Length: 254
Image (cartoon, rainbow, N blue to C red):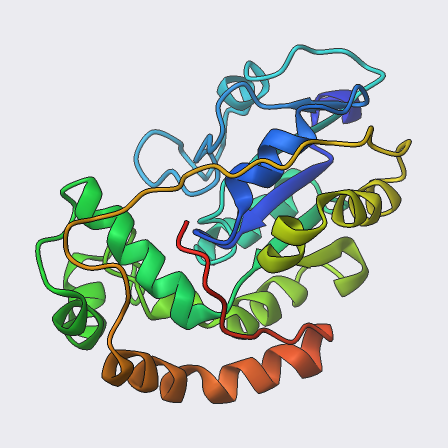
């Protein structure tokens, strides 16, 4: 595998934190070659890939192959799916990561709403977040890792970033807030351009993608919000110490 073939960067997460919009913006830059499929799920594939001797050709087939462009892709489960971290180190030890963040209470609500829309869950939100810890163990492909019922687990960002940072230096990671991408995408994209060492992005129109609603209600209850805020409080303090990013509750519902 030549250096030119390898991905240079990856939008690693977090799910329901604006990764689809960021992926859309990245596709506008002439120096970037984004995977044809948003969310290739290559490095979290536990079935089709033999991780003892991985074949990267299906991943590389996602790209146009221009040597003057940086290759990147966006699979937001990557941050949470910690077995992928070691696979990525083996693949490219110089890989850079863009991590989108959002208050984990809002993220959990958005995650559940998406699952309801897609018929991936039938439980009310209150029950889903309280029984989910057991469901993660029962449904997961790895202990403590599950794709759909991980409403709470995915919100422990600092724990996941710390895992990634045992393999890649923090200087290889750019941490962005969804709220900033929504309010001032040009400023956020300027940070991305500097991080990837590419020319400035053209001025962009605001993108708002993956927006939807459910008949189950338009707002979580105060009791559920307080429950989640309590679970995440310590982790958010750790996140701020680790990355300098402070997350506040927001009103976005994507």
